[in-house]
Image (cartoon, rainbow, N blue to C red; front, side, top):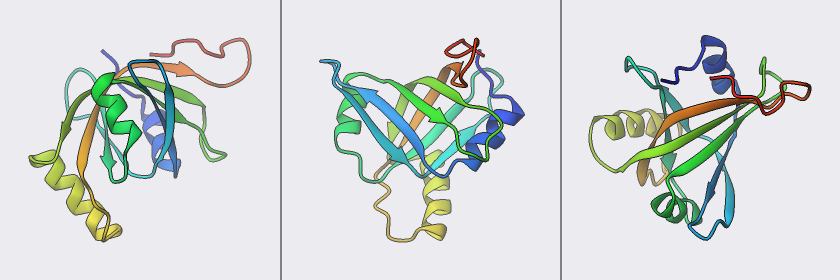
Length: 139
């Protein structure tokens, strides 16, 4: 079970652009900037992150081939530096989560294509700060 700490949730909200890493089946890496991400901590077990597919090309192909992803969380305003590993459990353009998120996004950024919601189950969190604990699993 992986649940984000309150500090991690606040840090995610502070970062304006989250780098999202994917890889194809042939192990070709791809990294893109994510500007729209939300935390879903409503469950009793694992936390999830929802991201909006507005302009994914290689990224969505990679996710369909290999659902493992990573997000990097850091900015000068954050208290820490973490890497979130996860697995995409759903890609959808319908349902409650999609409707809720697209409604919020449309009110702030009208005109975005909002193709799909990508639901990422958090499977591990790692320290990215330099020093003796660099790369160590936090959760």
